[in-house]
Length: 444
Image 1 (cartoon, rainbow, N blue to C red):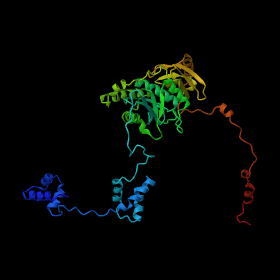
Image 2 (image 1 turned 90 degrees about the vertical axis):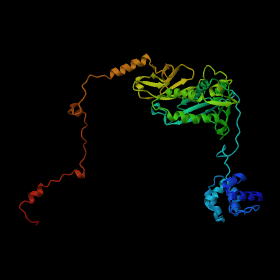
Image 3 (image 1 turned 45 degrees about the horizontal axis):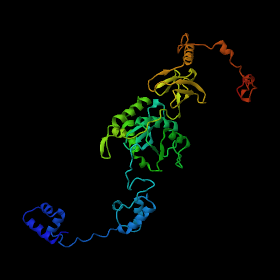
Image 4 (image 1 turned 60 degrees about the horizontal axis):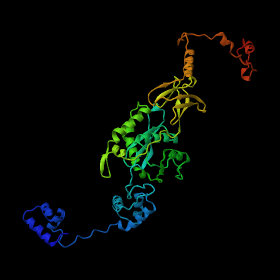
């Protein structure tokens, strides 16, 4: 509504040749409002007639209560109910009213971080490292890891620097190896480690730290914090790192890499892409690597926690198994067979066992990823004997050569079985009937 003075001004300016848009800008009003007063559709000082009663108003309390009872009830179900009770509006209008009035409440159980206020969590320097696993689908088939590879990601909560560890399993031994390896790449230990309720760290039902992992935490001198159930946003730093690892690194990983080469590729990606990123912390704008370097991290123990890594391998035709980018020998009798390889973290040798647990070989390990072939003298001698014993100077058989059955084979044939004649084996002699029938041309 415009005042009487503004109405007079608008008419005067219109008579002077001003356009409606110019008058609207002069008065600071909407041009549709000015046009309505100039055309006589509205009168100054008189408010526009109130709109008709919204038919949704009478059902708003009912819809609000229905959402309290069931926050996931479908809008079309509510529309059926209110229509049966006399609602006269259309379905698109009904759903628009639900959105405009924000009647559907957020479900705390299903989306705890959606639709509610969020606070920024303070992360003092050197206090917390966040850890979580990520599943990488469809690893290269020649890795022998099955349908899924796993990555352990560790991120410094303060600076956001993170690194990853590629693994065929999420068991506790591989978790410990990943914790040790990633911690050394991050530059040191924080005061505390934060996990969700992964089974290798805590009991999922109670949230209590397992006794076996308690020894790991004591070895590294860190406290363990567990996120409350269904509160993944508490680990936002590592969750964002996992998203980047899956979409920016794993998604484009070449098919022909070995696991060791893939791990090196992941490390190079973090150093090349993540560390140089700019980030503002406490009004200081610099790279993530420099922020991480300023955190007071403690040194990592010289020796990793002595967990034992055990993985299954298939011996090749040359009686070799692959382990950490190198090859180690087994007895030639186990070629193309399944064996287990075990290594205690920090020890410079591996044990190769049969599926029943019998140790068949122990090798000193070569540096990871150098492509070394490690054989014992015994295995070399046995393999040479097997290979030389398989040599022959016999002429190969031709595919269309005639080879009759030998007398030795005939002598080995079993004698035919003897049995009493059955009814079907009886032979009837018709010669007597044939003699009696000679010369006769009638049946009598």
